[in-house]
Image (cartoon, rainbow, N blue to C red):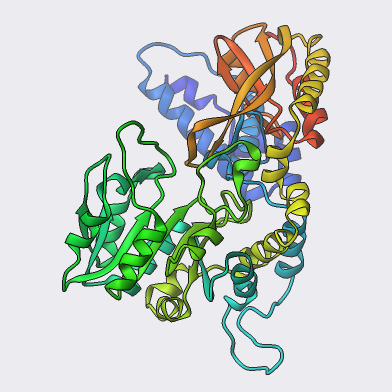
Length: 464
């Protein structure tokens, strides 16, 4: 073993090899040298601890391995992905892609300084929420609004400001847990409010709420159970009924509608998703919803409602910790502007455009791509198939959207093909079903069709 270790090339010798010379020019001498040292240290450890003689790569092989490792290490964790999964609001892939107008607004605002908290008319200090408040109020009918970094933050902030130290009445059937172990009771505890459960899992009546109201009651909270459905022998209380009860007892009604639609999704065949404006019209004092789900904007949470309550929330100490920056405000403003014209929004907001895409169009695209991929050495068979896509993002879990997929029977295995496509640039993600790899046209933008074909062309030989 000692003789083997003595024969290992030095750091300077490896740096003079052709693969690493090029990396020194493109990256940095210090970074490459550190990589070489790390590689040699690990190799010495492996040789010293090996129970039997192990093969040692040649200096050229070492240099190539180090170069490959450094290239992989230098690749950013966040990379562009073509979403062929059929999950429209894929949380793992950043949920909704934003509109071109929103991207342009972010670029314009982020490239320099911006009037985030300056009133340009007076030159005095202003509030950053003014960038979007007017549009939120216009589109929902609320008196005032603010924006946080997500809807979980909006919920915690609102409960802290409006019910800290008091009881908040919630139906047992609405004590939800969503992705990432986010549990409503835990959020309520962190806010300083006390949970008071009423009703049962499947049935809650108006009298359940009324009986629970007492001197310690701070608010009534209604939560839309976005990611599950209770069916059968059920009973829930409407926003309008709860608003009347809350008003009678001079309590605020907080309506957490979750995904946050600004338009009625029934036009896309998706039922029972609450619309922000309808909740305000039904009498909710404060509504909470996401900006990056059914609105199709940047990640954020939106609080809208009566001015007296929104002003109280703005003054809460947690507000500063949960506020958003200029890029989020710019993207949200540009997205909300599109909703002034519902037809324009359906054309320019990618989420709405995907949902509006005619099935016949998806079929034609699937047929074309299947024809182009059939000659790939990685493909044994390829055909268009009719399938079902889903909304995702914790919204309408039991409802599906008709779609067409390219169904690929790989030359090797579906899992191996999926892994190779994920490693590409851009990465391509689909879903594996019954030993076939499916690419769903509902979530692949038409502008990405050629990139999908090129991704297969860039895979190399079928056995690599």
